[in-house]
Image 1 (cartoon, rainbow, N blue to C red):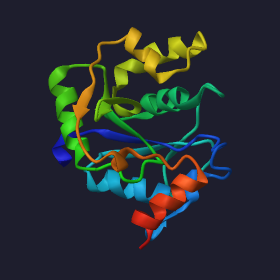
Image 2 (cartoon, one colour):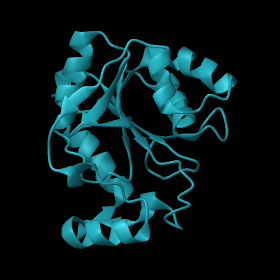
Image 3 (cartoon, rainbow, N blue to C red):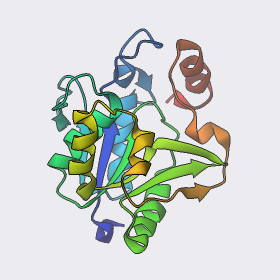
Length: 192
């Protein structure tokens, strides 16, 4: 899929309030959730991997928010400004079972559709933090952040978009947001 020429943005800058500790450093397989996300991006053929983070995670390329306190939209904005590819797939670090092969389908569809925002709709549920964002949305998002309009879903009011609808096992989109959810997913899928 290397001909796809896309950037993969991993959202890893959250405060992890519900988890009580940094999610990106939680063990998963032979590394951490962050290691797993980066490896998945590379296997999917991403031309570059950008980590939206509130601190450095060597050796990864981390991008700090330009607008503090703006949540995931602030992280997406900062990474879009740094992305070398016009199409950027965004996936949170706490969705370790996201199928990497879905990336090619989403990027191709985004390229063919010409939409600036293509959020995943999994089994009828919109997943606004998982999707393809065109780099051209960066100035639009900047305007939103200036108005303190920080919800990713609000982007749909300002750009051409459509959901990328897919059906599949619900567990593939399960977030490790709480210690209990993480323990359950780790016991089933995260051990090396």
